[in-house]
Amino acid sequence: PYHKIIDGSLAQETVLTFDSKLLEGTFLQPLAVFIDEEIYIVESKFNEVTDGKWLVNIEGKISIKDLTRIPVGMVKVVGTNASFECLLTDIIVLAKCKRVFTKNV
Image 1 (cartoon, helix red, strand yellow):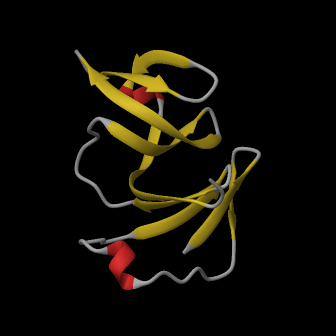
Image 2: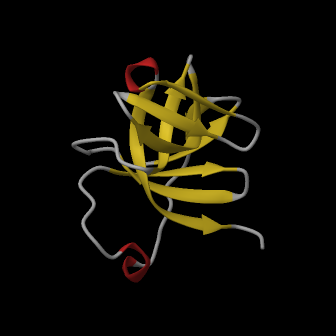
Image 3: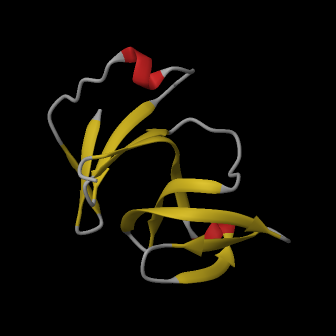
């Protein structure tokens, strides 16, 4: 499925086609997400949250954030405008970013 993030919400879009060479690896439940001139290929099936870029829901708004696990059960959340620390359970982690394609350089 292909989605756009518009004002913090996921909006279903039309089909997006990629060459399979660009998506090498195993994807169980992939999604394509377009935001800020970038297309993220994310994996929505995961066992645990690790450091990296993630698709998250924070207080009802969906976005891509950098997450870093910190003790005990906490996470540092970094975005383009702000960063903060919270309990991992305070946010909803939706999918792990696996690839990013930039529309304009």
